Image (tube, rainbow, N blue to C red; front, side):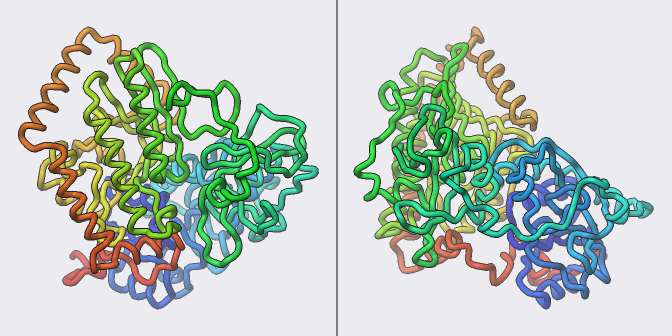
Length: 576
């Protein structure tokens, strides 16, 4: 079928559904919800058989839903209505939640139900739940709804009949007054519930050091008791520690509420001056690496060992890697390569493996061009260190999504295994025609061939884990359940470490690297890539800087990129 996506942005859920439906042979086009006339024009051009709205912030106009079947993906159980469905569920501690696919009508979230899925509601940040449980449930529900629509005989159930009598209600937009933390009375669990429900957007309005700000990225701390509730008592790397009535929580990210347009940045960076008089709370760690702490605490880099395998975890907020984070991770990597293990696994974070350079940090820098240059060189140094490790078999285990330079940082490993459901965006051009580095010109053609590499960079489309294996970019797609994936990775890595042919594999690896270096040195690839990047950062064309500014400030879209809106391509016509 021809299916049109109407969405506020091409977010993780929209991309997941796009990949799933394309894989089934449907023809898809995307239109951003900019204004009613723009959406109406898209419908007239594409003439879709079905319209799907994976992520909208306002109602579809009657001029569209009265003439076409429009399926809305609502992140709530049947009968739940309103724009803050997931926020309320997290903050109120629901045991389970769901996704409902319903048909657009004149009443918000109240149309007939085409499909629904439920899932246990993990105690986690909203952004994490959305990317994992919500995306998985939405994928199953939407595929079922599309199959029912294509069959032509299914009759959707009216919401009033489908909703359980005891659950599901119309709830208002959650306001900051609903999210407020009472530091003098709220325990750690209650504070974390509020931070989790607001994570990603809009954050919890609060104050730090007398300054109004929004709080994000909360983590529990088990090791401290008895400090004055609400007081900031310590810091570690990018996060600050704040006391509750029964313990403490780490706050990783903040955004000053004044001046308007302030960026969300690491808390310890925003309040560096105020933290100068407070104690640092470093984790005890050998050399530069961080062994996994036995207690609940905030730890963005940690190392574990088991069965001849080393596991290096790096959980950076939203997968963005600043200059310092790249340097710290490289130091941890180099320390890990000295451990007596035959296999090293780069685990990344549970929601993101990596999304490459840190655009927010770059935007906030005194010279964004200079910080861009420092950041790309730091991540290139890390990539080179992984490529040139000759003494261990290296594996990148993608638990979460991966984008731009993060995809090619993962590809520096000998093997790349991804969890089913993970999305890849192995391209750069959407960020103002950014050329990209991380040795992609060496890594990508070698894996997928020159022609396919050119198409991946040109088309700029998301790639599922299954498609990644089919193209050769990935080596394996493993189970979609996150915990089972980690167990499977550990088992497979352990088998490789114990295999009698490990020495031979490492010898072959060293031979290939020497042959590649003789054919064309790594330094040559890097120099050519950085020459292009230097033009992006310092040249006369400001496209990268303009695109980055709009991205980090979440500027509303004024048009849909043409590689998504195929109905707006010159020469487009409805297939006969």
